[in-house]
Length: 279
Image 1 (tube, rainbow, N blue to C red):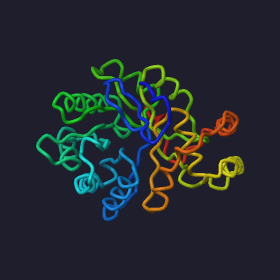
Image 2: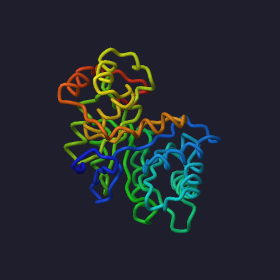
Image 3: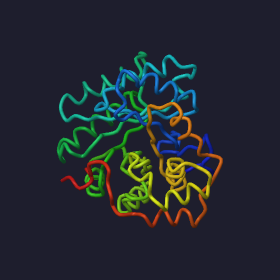
């Protein structure tokens, strides 16, 4: 995996397959189906080219409809979804691809296993089904989400295709150094979900100080921190002004001392359920 030379608006990270993933994504977690299509169309118009959905979000079809209705060709938009079930796996994979991209030759750019919660044997079955999806051209890349070091180590014993991505909770208060170091050592790109800490740190004095110093919002500072760490942040919002503001992060850079101040906030503090310790 290699980051682009800068974290500009068109910056990408090159996965092991050679495919490029836009470094700033747009999440649709907890976006109701009835608003997702509108929200994704706003995001695309604002310049996002990377949309992150999941079976458990119940809005894959709306993401697909938004892309189809947009002025942007399918090949220009990177779409991720996630497998959330341990039964009917091949059928559910096919359903997701059809929802995201219903064309006869439709595909998903990145398909992840959402959680290691299915257990060791089912995780193996899930991964082998995803490998088959790649073989049939239905997924460009595959990866995992919420996987800890032990899950990734187990996977290395049976995977024919190495995971391109691990999507985990990452922000200054939850930096997960062991998993991050492992993924970096094995060229697994790191996607950061909940990069805005679900708004729970909006009054943090360190964050507010840096926001004042940069003339940016606390949310923009957190997204910029993630980009400069080499992560792929996935901010989400259903509010037009915030969607646009969360992309307006390419005209400033955090200084070394500002980055250090944020790096020192780590408390292993999760705002989402921590799956990485599951057996």
